[in-house]
Length: 386
Image (tube, rainbow, N blue to C red; front, side, top):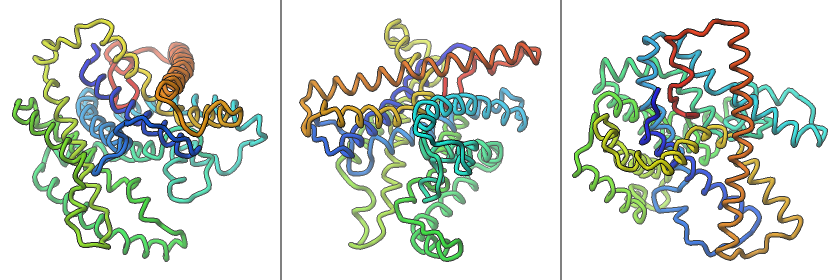
C-alpha cells in the first residue's frame, strides 16, 4: 500500500515532540540548565502530552480503515494489531535486557510478568513493582484501546450522537470526581492512587482516541476557515490555561485535560485539511523527494524509536555526566549537538532492531505458513509503527 505523506508527517511530528520533551526532562533530572527557548511547556499543554494525544487520535483515525480492510472481523483485527506491536516490543526489550539487566545480574523475575504483557510502564505509573525498561506508560493504554476498538467502532458508526454525549458525561464525572474515586479505590485495594496518575488513565485519554474515529467517519475535509480557527486555538491555549483558570482557587485542576484535548484536536485539524485523496495528490511537500524520504523514514521507525528512546537518553546523559562531559549549563551549540547525537543513536538502534525483527518474522512466516496475497498487512500503515 502506498504511504500517505500526511499521516507519516503527523506521526513523525508527534514522535519528535515526545523525543524533545523527554530530552529536556533528562536535562532537568541531571540538574543541567540550558538557555534554549524551546516551547516545551505551554499553559494548556506540554510537548509530551500533545505528542501522546496526537498519537492516540491518529491511532483512532487509521484503525477505522484497518478494521474495514479486515472485513470487520474482530479476530483478524486483533491478530494484525498484536503482530504490529509485540514482535518489535519483545525484540527491543531483549536488546535492552542484554545491554543493561544481564550485565548487572538482573535475571528474570516475577516482575517481568507485566513486561511480557506490555503493561510494565502502565503499571509502574500506578506504583506496582515492574521491570520497566522500554516504551512508555501509554503503550498499555494503546493496548486497552486496541481491545476496545471493535466496540468503539460500532458505537461511533451506529449511534454517533448518543455515544458521543454519553462518553462526554462519563468523562466529565470521572475527571471531576477523581480525587474521591481515587480515595475509595485506595481504601479497597490498599494501594494509593495519586492525582498525578490521572494523566495516565485510559478513561481520561479515551476521548482523544475516539475523536480520531469520528474524524475518520465523518470529517472528509476541513474548510480553510477551520484551519485558521485551529491555528488560533492552539496559539491561544499556548498562553491561556483553559479551563483551569475559570475554577475557584484550590479546586482540583483536572480540567487541564480539556485544554490539552482541545489543543490535540486543533493540531490534528491542521493536518486533516490535507487528508483527503485529492489534496494528498496535490500536496507539493509530498513531491519533494528528500522531505518525503525523511518523513517516511522517521514514521516507519517511529514505534521502535518510541520504545527505546528514553532508556537511550537516560544512559547517554548518565554516562556523560559521570565522565564530566556535560556541564551544569549547556550552550546552544552543545544542546543541539547532544540532541541530534541522541536522535541519531536512537534511529540507528531502532533500524537494527526493526530490520532484524522483520527479517526474522518474514523467514518464520515463509517457513510455517503460506502468504495470503490478499492480505495487505505487510505494507499497510498501522497506527504506530509505519
